[in-house]
Amino acid sequence: MIVREVVEKLGLQVVAGSAALNREITGGYAADLLSCVMARAKPGNVWVTLQAHPNVIAVAVLLELAAVIVTENAPIAAEVAAKAEAEKLVVLATPCTTFAIVTELARLGVAAQE
Image 1 (cartoon, one colour):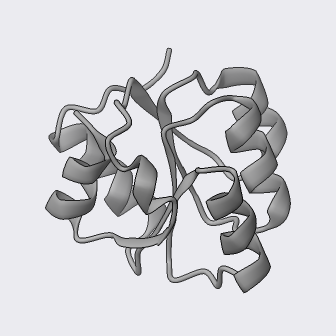
Image 2: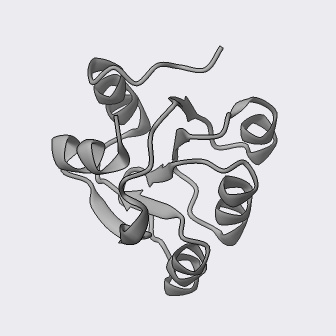
Image 3: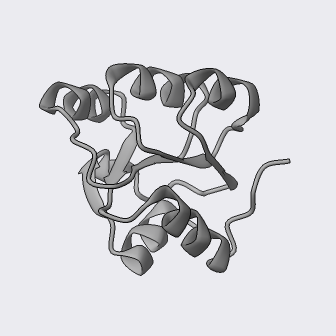
């Protein structure tokens, strides 16, 4: 599955990285602690989080994640979106909770990382 399909099927808002919507998703990871993400997320994962600060972008780029989904309408500052755009990182937004998005990703066949 590619990021564009997730955007369309879940009605997500593209905040940054629209040029990279054809990235393949290898699995998913959900956490708000950056240290957990750095230890467990894998390249190509979609990361679901409530966090929307510059360090999220840095971690996602470092790990070569396919996309970041920011939940619960958490505000994404313009400079964070600009950093993601410059790094060609897809950042998506939703009013849904993290639990709801993870449930829907699983329903679509996005597997958890073990």
